[in-house]
Length: 211
Image: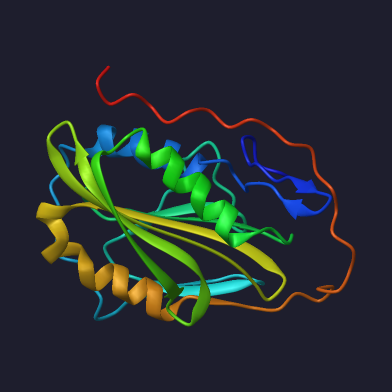
């Protein structure tokens, strides 16, 4: 079952974008909604564990999985939220796509949201290799940092987006580190089976922060 708004496209000779910036859409909207929330120190001493058939990770005891999100799916799309406005979003599916294309779609989405965006590339999220970028800019005068990563590993495409206001980095950095260092992808039972072609669904544009 596909989540409404999930975007996957398989094309002859190449793979088009995965989720077409849906990560930037949700991050932008939720940043504006949660901007006034007060942040707390990430409790990493006794972390919670999220273990599913294709992946597992640890996260801070005082952070929560947003099961109320309309697009929430425990195996394909979910976010782990801090008490304030920081969170990390995971978008996963058993299909092969191009990590570089997926990353570029996320960058394009954030470029419409962040003012004076600075981009710093990286190649690994924890133990997983792929394509990533750290984006720094401002929204409504508030400095924020976004770390977005895309990969195809263990027969699965993953896009990960984490975001926080720069002023809260001291509260949340240990929480993000815990999640990243503990995140692993597990191989599927039918990794060599032919990929299923799926219909392209257009994702909404990121919200205009000036509205």
